[in-house]
Amino acid sequence: MSAEQGYQAIFNENNQEFVIAGKLRPRSEDEIRPLSEALSQALSTVRGTFYLNVKRLARLNNVAFRVIAGLVSQVGQSRTDLKIEVVTSSVMGWSTRKFEPLARRLPNVTVTEYDKDFYPGQAFLEEGGFIPILRNQTRLTWRHERHLLPRHGLNPGMTMADICCGIGDFAVLAQKEFKPSRILALDHSRSSLDYARKVAHEFGVTDIEYVYGDASEMVIEDDQFDFVTCRHSLQIFDKPDMILRELYRICKPGGRVYITNEKNSHCLGEPRSESIQWTYTEVAKLFADFRMDVELGPKSRRYLADAGFEDIKVDSFMVTNLDGDPQDFADMIQAWENVYAGEMARDRGDTPEFISKFRRGFQDHIYAALHPKGYAGWPIWAASARKPI
Ligand SMILES: C[S@@+](CC[C@H](N)C(=O)[O-])C[C@H]1O[C@@H](n2cnc3c(N)ncnc32)[C@H](O)[C@@H]1O
Image 1: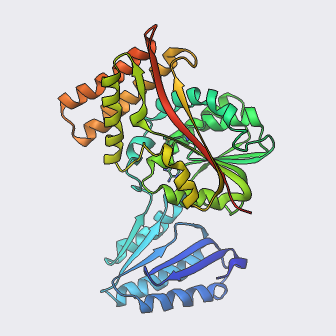
Image 2 (image 1 turned 90 degrees about the vertical axis):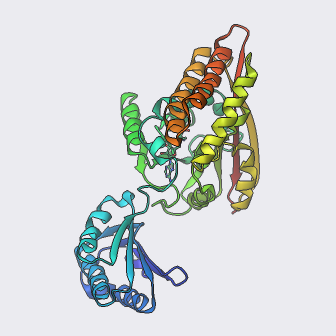
Image 3 (image 1 turned 180 degrees about the vertical axis):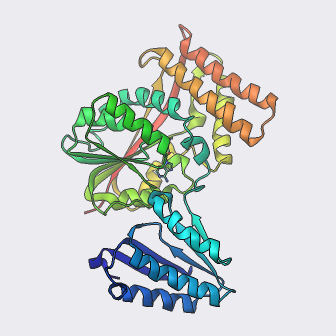
């Protein structure tokens, strides 16, 4: 409805959800009469709980707000049997504040910011503890990826998006090496984005667009980018197919989507291989308890095929202590231990005995990495595929 006015309104009867997206800035109530009639009609047909989804509503002026709030209040007051849930998003920070007064006035109206607590590992990933991990990881994987990326279709001058960009190091490196004509980097962690902007500023990089957003509901038009990357992130989201759907949507037909993921239980080292293997098998179980699949790497082909892509390419490479300074590898493992054993295992309620054995495997991996005859590895799967024309 009314795409020409910059908004869409759709009622989904199956889940009693009325979705309003885009920009709603009428000069008069008359201009949005089709919307108010559709909303009123939808409200009159539902029972139980009615969802008013404004997650992707980017703009809402007071004229439109009065119309929507008026209908919600009227129905909320007259039909106390009906629950009305307004679903907002932190990506549109104003929307929660705007609708909350309605919930304060009417006991059967609630306002839910759907992405406040929307994927299981959010607290660990968004609260800053991951920054040292991501810094070290990107430094180590870049040595491999810079050579792989052209094979997966990244060429100079392309338009590019890095979704779930974390602290943005990859975007900076890709920008320097491949000189894209446009590069957008999106993440749902404000602390990581602040960090990314600071680093870019320090390095005099000015042309990366850092955007706060939700990768499973991006406020980005369809068919925008030649090359869309999403690194180490499908594995931490409990619904990777939702993110893939969005990566597909924003990729141009004929463009490619590139993903990297791990298989943690395959981390290895010599000497002390058994202790190392035990710990990384436990890492995979720990993440699974938080509904994250850090074993996703080899499943990339299936995910890409199921999402409708073609010409799928899959590479795997092993980051090792011999790639550069072994201390870099050791620093990465130490950062893993700090978060996985120091925060996640503790939050899961593991016993001190378990945590101590768990820590031992990380220390043994560091030992293997720094030992003059030792070898330590971390395997990664890099996969890409084309969006059909
Ligand atoms: C393991 S980190 C990887 C970051 C970066 N790609 C890298 O390789 O360094 C996962 C990132 O995904 C982000 N993330 C998780 N769910 C997201 C979502 N729904 N939308 C946007 N970002 C999300 C987290 O904030 C985090 O920065």
